[in-house]
Image (cartoon, rainbow, N blue to C red; front, top):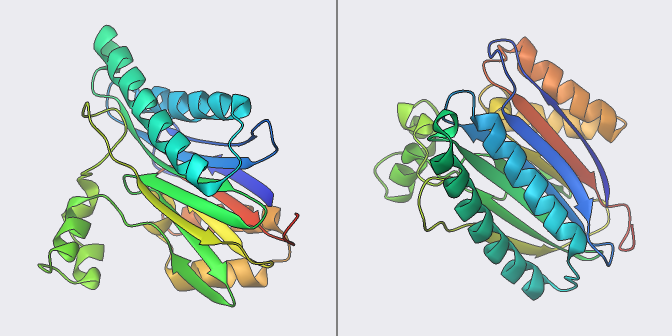
Amino acid sequence: MKIAYATDTGRVRADNQDYVGAFKNQLGVQLAIVADGVGGEQAGDVASNMAVSHLGNAWRQATVQTIAEAKTWIVQAIQQENATILETAGRYRTLEGMATTIVLAVIFPDQICFGNLGDSRAYMLRNAQLFQITEDHNLAQELVRAGSMTPDEASANGGRNVLTRQLGVNEETEIDLFDFALQPGDEILLTTDGLVKHLSNQVIYDTLTQVSSMTEAVSQLIQQTNEAGGSDNVTVLLGYQESEDA
């Protein structure tokens, strides 16, 4: 899968606490990660950097070659990184309370596995339809799942800003996993919530389908987000599946 990504501070925040990376393991299997750091005295960037860097470096040494192995690896790696962030935050006062969201994808030639913690999202564009793969882990979405609020009500509810799952908050953490067969022409999007605060699914879809290159699409999505207010850091990672062996 061809991958392009970029991150931007936005128009309001002084610092960028997002982090992004793409890696290959010993067998050439790809791992894409986007993280959005929160908490601490400017420590969110430390948590997101740690998560992406540590998971990426561990993936480079891995020999995962099946979806089942990928799921096991993700769960174990997330648990290890959660413990590492908690231990580091407890050691340094300036890092106290740091945490991060994370959304990732392990990409095989014909299959993909997504995982997420928090409100960074994964989407897939397939057959001219844009699907949101992940579910946000925040208070508003929990109320939607409980039937107490509609999705439209949740989009404007303050509970969107109250995360119910993150990496580095509790000793136990659970990452949601989703796996699918890949088809030629599939496109994936991993993004922090800075994008979806400002851009509708229709705008995202129009950009992905009308822009000629992934690099240009990444740039345009970030530009559109900033033009719409840029109230948060924004990170966009796109992947395009040309063929089963691309």
